[in-house]
Length: 111
Length: 112
Image (cartoon, each protein chain N blue to C red):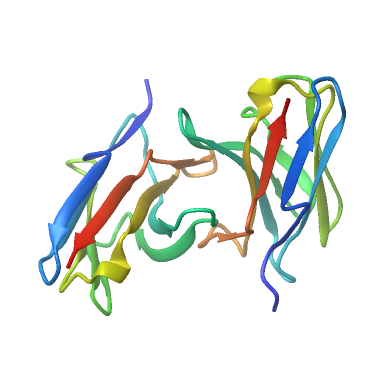
């Protein structure tokens, strides 16, 4: 069956450290993988998109990797700040099939 | 641009009543998505449109749910009759192509 998993429901890290979030999928062949941030009471906000033929994408303190062999994407936030605390969602675009979100990881950056 | 606009922001209704949620996508976007978010099930895709045409409604839970997009600037999601298990936050999102989604603020629906 098709499944998207994100490494943990919640992740606590110390300010200044690098946060690494994982998105694993099975029985999908995504054309794109996207990462979103969601704050309580708000809709998800797009952060980064990576295509199946790309290995890595960066934007400021954010970095995303995509390994189609491992069926995994890693999302890194370097020099994390308390303002980075939020839920982070990965989403797959399944080549004309549908658009599927993972369950999310709630990140808390502790001062 | 004002972003994706949803109304109402909150809706409280009684079981059996009809509920209509509204969405105005970003101008120029050709895809529109309706999602439902709950603690138990996360963010689920209900239906999406391309150029106002429904493409995939396999996520619509039951016949009580229906969605329309009469033109490029307006879509509705209707639940009739509503049930307590429909209580959730409903999001509308729009995209250009199959690119990054712009989400609306959501409608929090409570069915008593």
